[in-house]
Every structure is written in structure tokens, then in C-alpha cells.
Image (cartoon, rainbow, N blue to C red; front, side):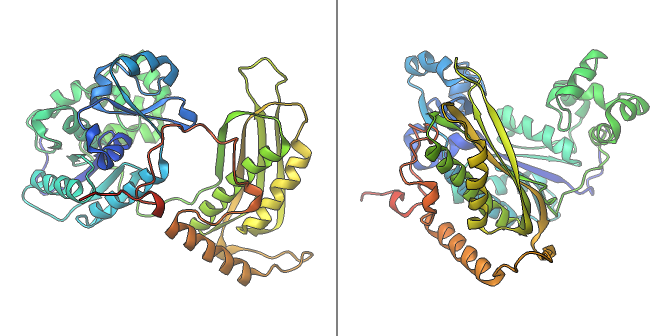
Length: 425
């Protein structure tokens, strides 16, 4: 099937090996060498250079399983540096948006776009790719198609097939079915693990097989979501760009500690740190919370008393005020904490979120000093955004010996004044 050249194209831009690419921007000696980035606590591999993939290092593979391979092939290993990656992502999205008529930021390293009408979309994709590389140093792949699902397929081909040089428009390809026949159904956007098992059980193994599956069967077994995916593979656009990001229902921050922790003071430091971060996210959402959940947990893998405790704390008046949220942490931990337990993980959840402009006061509670609270939080957030989290709370501690291990983290090149890249002339 061929599609009309007048159809609006969907562009999908995807950063190649994004976390590794961010490290290479600031250390060009890493280019051409095997590089991996590890998850929190240096636990698993979450980003690999092409050279590392060629060595057989798997995505999500435990780091300790790869230690011999790392040493044998001189693999450069980095702890995750999410503040750096988030800042680089913002720069990429700003660059991409300058060449688009509309944009949907899909993840930290992906975005769907509409672009101005042109007679040569492939060439426009090349210009977009070159501009991102010039301004940020990050290589991207560009997939172009008449639907979002087909642009995803095109992006994978652009990334894997050197002949396309990082940009591929599937729209007018003479044999789209041939391309879809080489695309595993589990890699089709919208096909999750359960649907994958279902499709394989009835012999639907490729994107082409799904494209020609019976409409009624897909609608019955995969609901309307699956039906839209199938129609999109046929070139019928059913999923438009999302201009409005859905409001979050909750915000969760939880981490595994870098070591076992039994001291109540250290557990409170960790929970306070997580709550401060969650409150910042809450304010960025322009939302308030009416209830928080605090939880602590021991490890499942050690021979000691196992314990998981969680407790809710409700507010009479919805809030985003960090000191009030920290008071909730202290009150909850007094109930949750069990002396003698070796804690390995803790976390906070902000629940029942409401829009800031929809806050309701309580008839039987004192009216909070909203103006002072908001001015204080806005000032703190602005300072931390500009200078790199220089303001915090004493309850979060200073040494933070409980923090996850990140022994191989690169400097915060773009978010900390003291770690800016130094160039010697």
C-alpha cells in the first residue's frame, strides 16, 4: 500500500544510547569504546554503547555478572547521573521544538513531532538530526510515517540500518509489508507483555501479521487500544499528538539504600530527602496533596527479620508546603520504625492530588498562611533550579551515608557551578 504524499507525517526522534551519549559529549575519549551506564545503586546496566552491545552485555543485566567482561574488554562504567541527563534532554527538546509545528515529549529521550509541510521530509529529518547534533552533541534517529505507530517502526529501521543514515520515511516505501514482516510483534508500539503472549499463541509473530489480523478478533481480545494499533499499521492515523499531559494521580519517590540501615535518624534523613524531592515535583505539577503514604522495608535477600511497614497521613487542607510534608514524615516514622530491623529501602507517596487552584479550606482548621508559604517555596525552588539544589532542610542530613552507591558518577557538567567543564588553552 502506498500513501498519499499530502498526508501529514509524524516524526519520531529518539536519542541513540542516550545516557551513554550524554557521557560522551563531555568526554570525547569515550567515542568508539565500550561504555555502559548503571542504574541507581550501581545495580544493573541501563544504557549501552553499540560497542558494549557487541560484547553481549544485556540491557538490565546485573553489573556484578559483567565484572569479568568489563575488565577483559576495558569497558568504561558510569553511575547514573540523572540531573545531567535531564538537562541534556531539555536542551534537545528545545532544539527539536524550534523546527516543529507541534511536539509531544514522550520520554526523556523521545518525542513525536509535526513539522511544517515540505516536499522532502527525509531531508527535513536530516536537517533536524544535524541541528540537534550541532547544538547538543547527541546523535538522534528520526523515524517518519503517516501514523505514530509506523513512525516508531521507521525509527527502529533508521537506527539499525546504516543505509538510512539515521533518518527513514516509511510513508512512500514501495513494500511496507516486507518491512513489517521483519519487525517482531513484541517491538510494535502498544503491544505489551500480555498481548505479546496472546498474539504469539495464535501465530501472530510480526507487525505484518498483526496488520492483517481480523478486526473483530483484535477488538475482542485487545480492546480498542489494540484495534487502533492494528489500524495504525495499516496507515490509518488513530492516535494524535498529546498536547496536554494528563495530570498525575500520585507522585512516588523511593530508593534502595547503599547499605543496610538500622538507625532511626538515618531512615528519617532518607525519607526527608525523598519528601523534599517529591514536594518539588508536586509544585512543578501545580498540584497539592491531601494524603501521603510513608513506607519502609527490609531486604528480601538477607537472613534477618523481614519487615514492611506503610502508613497514611491525611491533611485537613491540601498542601504543597515542604515543612508540613516533613512533619508528616516524622509523625509516620514514629509509628513505623521497629528497632533492630535492618532497613534496605524506604519511600514516600503523595496521593489524592488536586489542582492548586482547586484547594478547599477546612471549616474546623486554622487558615494556613498561604501567601507566605507559596512565596517561600517559590523562592527556594528558583534558587535550587538555578544553582543546583543548594538549599535543603536539616532533617535531610548532611553526610547522608545511607545514599545509594554511585561510585562512578561523572560530574554535573551543566547543573553545578563547581563541576562545570574546564577547558585548558
